[in-house]
Structure formats: structure tokens, C-alpha cells
Amino acid sequence: MRALLTPEIAPIAGVVLFRPGSELMWLFRQGRVVIETPGEQLADMPSGALPQSHQPLAEDASLLPVFENPRVIQRAGGLSVLDAWLMKKRECQWPHNEWHADDFTIMRHEPGSMLLCWGCDNQLRDQSTERLAGIARKNLVSWLLKTVSGQLGFSEDHVLTLPEFCWWLVKNGLADVIPESMAIKALRLQPEPMQSVMRESDITPSLPAVELLQEKAKKIVAVKVDPETPESFMLKPKRRRWENEKYTRWVKTQPCVCCSKPADDPHHLIGHGQGGMGTKAHDLFVIPLCREHHEELHAGPVAFEAKYGDQLTLLFRFLDRALAIGVLA
Image: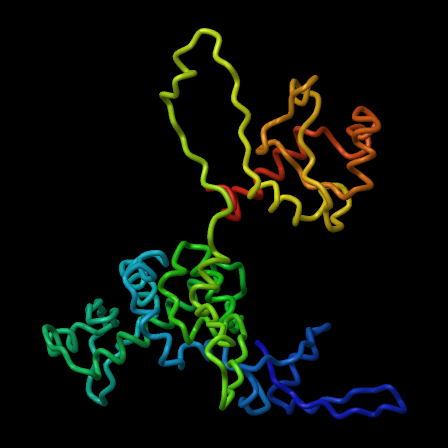
């Protein structure tokens, strides 16, 4: 349960007072409570208890093409998962004052599904109306937002924001379905100032927000597998060194694996059969280090590993993270 309350401040006494009302007083009898600033999506909400199912994104008509996109639905689990979610409600969704049967079934209707009792299903089967589509669409959007919120690790009462929804799309390889208006809001881009007179040579066209978002979503490195390289058929093949400046440049932007401060260098593995005389480890075998820890490692690898851990362990953890977030694909 969450509540939106207006504080009354006594600055001299250093006290903040709330008037939750008798119906919300039980929240404060539970012990500690979490206090946070309300986001933009709660700006127009009245004070009092917040409904758990309130999702402002569900009311944004510009997002409907995204919600109804077959790839988005499939990535969330597909309509069969939506049907299973609806069956838990055990209440006929067709509104009327007449009798409802005690048994329920799912009726598919574009763009989603709805839960009906057997009597209403017999009456409405094979019909296609805007009213039915509205119920099916509401179910689809509610289920999608709940599923996305859960996959991102949020609780059931979390209010999903547009940047969070965009991140879920990007994370699941769906950046191309994001419309321009949605990308602009997610990136919080300001509209370009209008000027009455401009020379043609001064006009610099800006990139569309969708293109910017897709550029951010691109994988850093795509690792290819070739099981039949010429060297694989040789008895004593000449070793190749794998190089990828794009990957090492990204590694340099990550936190130092020792102190989590901004890294300065991508350190190539030394020892363990790597980085011998006149050779250098593959660009894949690198970890981010700040300048201080990079110099400490080269000054004494044994002492460094005794203090911070084996280089192979640090490399494994870093590669695992790079794969998990899609940098290596």
C-alpha cells in the first residue's frame, strides 16, 4: 500500500507532520515507512491512498502501437500467458446486470483476450465490436505493464515510468518498435529553438530520437564463430591476436574492478600464459583498472592478486557482466 500525502512543516522545531486520515493511520502503526518524492506521473493525483494498479502509461494512447506489437506481446510471454493471468481473476468482464454463470472461459478478441462466464461467451462468441476490443486492449496493456515491471525486478505496486519501459524494450532487442514521440520523452530531448531567419549553411539537421536510442542500444561487440578457419587444419598454426578497439574503449569507461572508481586503462591479462615476451593478450582478456591499481598490478602481480583476487577470477566476473548486459553478443 502506498499513499500520497501533503506534509506540514514546522521548520523551527524541525518537525514534519502528516494527516493521513483514519483510513490510512494503520500504515504508520506498522513501524518504519518509506518516504520518497512523487514523480511526474503522480502530479495530478489527489492526496490519499494510491491504487496499486494505477499505471499512467496505460492511459497514453501514443503507446498503443507498441503494446499491440506482436513482437512485444511475444517477448512478454505471448497471449497464452495473458490468458492464464486473466483466469486468476474469476470474474466475468462483460458488464450487465443479469445472471452470470459460475464457470469461466477465455475469449480471444483483437488485440488481446478477455475473461467471460460461459453464458456471456455463448452470447458474444464470434462477435467483433469496439466495446469488446476496448476490454481486450485494457487487459493486454495491464498484463504487459505488470509483466515488464516484474521482469525489471520491481514490486507489484511500482509505477512503471517511460524510460523504464524503453529500457525493457531495448534490453529485449525491441528498440526498433519505439516510436519517435516515445523516444523523445524517454531521452528527455528539448525541442530545437525556432529561428525566423537562418542561412542554409547554418542549418545542421539533428538525428531523430529513435536513431539516437537505437544507437545507444547497439551491441559493442558481436562475436562470430568460425569452426573451419584455415589455421584449425594446420598442425602448428600461427597464432592470431584478436583485436577490437571498440571493446577496449568500452572497457575503459567501466568502473575499476578493484575500487569501483572510474577506470583509466583496459588492462590486458599478464601471466597465466598470457602477455609474454613480445606478445600481448587478446583484447577480449581485459579488465578495467584505474591508473593507481594498474600500476600496482604491473609493479607486483603476485602481491596484487593476493590483495584483490586472481586476474582470471576478475576477468571471468567482468566477462560475465559484459555478456549479461548484451555488450558481448
